[in-house]
Length: 140
Ligand SMILES: CC(C)(COP(=O)(O)OP(=O)(O)OC[C@H]1O[C@@H](n2cnc3c(N)ncnc32)[C@H](O)[C@@H]1OP(=O)(O)O)[C@@H](O)C(=O)NCCC(=O)NCCS
Image 1 (cartoon, rainbow, N blue to C red):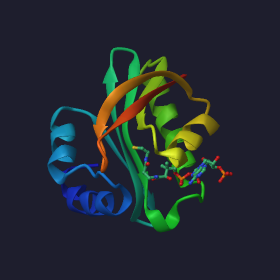
Image 2: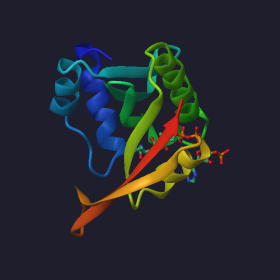
Image 3: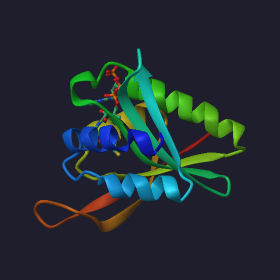
Image 4: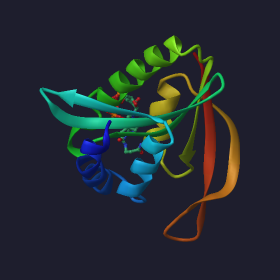
């Protein structure tokens, strides 16, 4: 992901998430040196991810697939690619936070071997008050 991709990414993000990152959030992430990754099919963006390395841990900050293409294996393929890349960076663990109510994403991560290792109370803004974050991790 580069600056040139940010309009398309931010548009997709609006369609995918109830509480989307802004274009500025993605730009800040790239400026901070985070990894930005696009999943392309015949040149068309079908998903993306943002990762941040902290010593030997990779934090998965965002992973998204276009709504009309979800449940077709693309998120799994993207996660597999990220795991391969992180292996090259001598990382030992992937860590992430997911909304308590995001049943689909929690199932997705469980399916890929992530365990729940903690909970951050009231971490996210929700439509009806705050929402907990579930912290999940997987060894690489
Ligand atoms: C989470 C996400 C990235 C998964 O990508 P995907 O391409 O839809 O997932 P896959 O097709 O690779 O799914 C693999 C497995 O994950 C689980 N899974 C995925 N979506 C699911 C859903 N809606 N409900 C239950 N389980 C689900 C299933 O076990 C699935 O395997 P199966 O289809 O054989 O049953 C995608 O659904 C998405 O973009 N969601 C919205 C954004 C989001 O919540 N991102 C994560 C938090 S930042």
